[in-house]
Amino acid sequence: MTALIYIAAALAEIGGCFAFWAWLKLGKSIWWLAPGVLSLVLFAYLLTLVPSDAAGRAYAAYGGVYIVASLVWLWAMEGVRPDRWDIAGAMLCLIGAAVILFGPRSV
Image 1: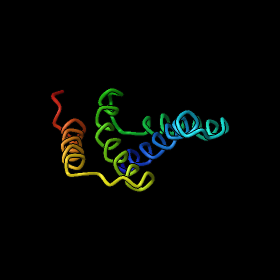
Image 2: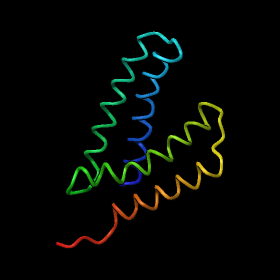
Image 3: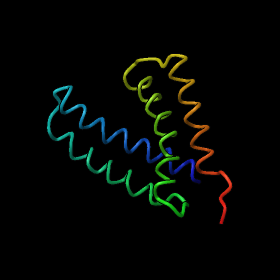
């Protein structure tokens, strides 16, 4: 369930941020900001659903998922295929996220 929450949060964050990008960098209407803000609110809410006793740990682990989702967005939405360095870096980030999220904790 945690993975699904992180994936949904990443899509919401990227979509929200892209709305601002589209407005400021691509000359889209200011009305792009309305769904963008809603998407960012959804992103913040979704991260509160992650089963973690520390917000910072949940956010840190999310970072790896966000990086992978950003590269998927790069390819799917912008037509730029990630290179081997993008993929290697993303895999390192996912490994780090897994260590943060699932590593044994001393009580």
